[in-house]
Image (tube, rainbow, N blue to C red; front, side, top):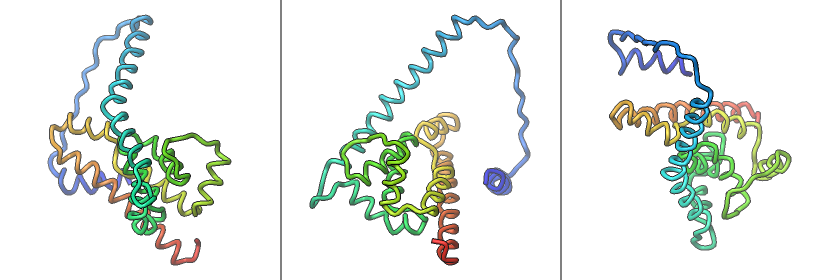
Length: 205
């Protein structure tokens, strides 16, 4: 998919004379173990804390509100998942999975915890062992097609918020962020739709 999209982009919006790339390497210096440890720990810690403050905390608040605010006895999360369910079914998944991908935009690693929270109708994220998770997914209609389409969409859908902010910083334009979100999402949705439709046509699910 990467080679295919690269070929398409090179023939369309990125068409033109190839640009050269020159990388100048600094002189080799013997690494200082103490400085490496201190810099790596500090940089990594500051990055994680900064991400938690700017992205994870607001996202966690939104997820908590959607899981705990109810309308007519149903949580906002369930209502939104129900609205997305027809589209999710067409893509071989369901509304809960699509809603989890949307809410997982700040950090893709919370997609499955959101799925579990929605299926269990809980108001908080949680962890489960593999056997319990497998049973929960089967109880909520997961098949091999659901798992396959979820995996493919996870690989091909929009990048996380941190990547989008980096693209904005490096390119200085929101249009490239939009392209980086739209293009993989369309590829993932199209591929999942084709696989789901073909599998159902053949009666494999």
